[in-house]
Length: 180
Image (cartoon, rainbow, N blue to C red):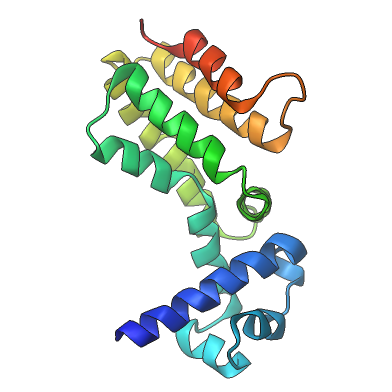
């Protein structure tokens, strides 16, 4: 794919993210995505064979897999790994577009097996790997601690507390689940 092709495809994805975040995956018309991207509807289908293919691309980007991968590839462990994930997660989903896309993606797992598999990957495979990197083993207790951590981040994202700011929330969450 040429650089200009990659740029056009990325522009379509960014437009789709914006439109899907407002209208949802199923109610957003492709012509609105094309208009937002400044391209024809036909060009959207040149890069994505179907609306479902575009939905799956956006859904994949809405999940926190990129955050976990980034923190893991940096070689972090223990509390530092949890902090990296927590800070990056809360930053990513402080963007209303990303927050709404995460909600739409979670709801779409009943329709898309690929989305269900990606969510399962985060909840299962990454939970084991994170437990080993944070606590030194992937025992059931340590996997539950990781799920508690990730679930608490999601809870903050879905319903940000009025009485605790993001930094304080992360600090207290780390105190609860850190291996120290």
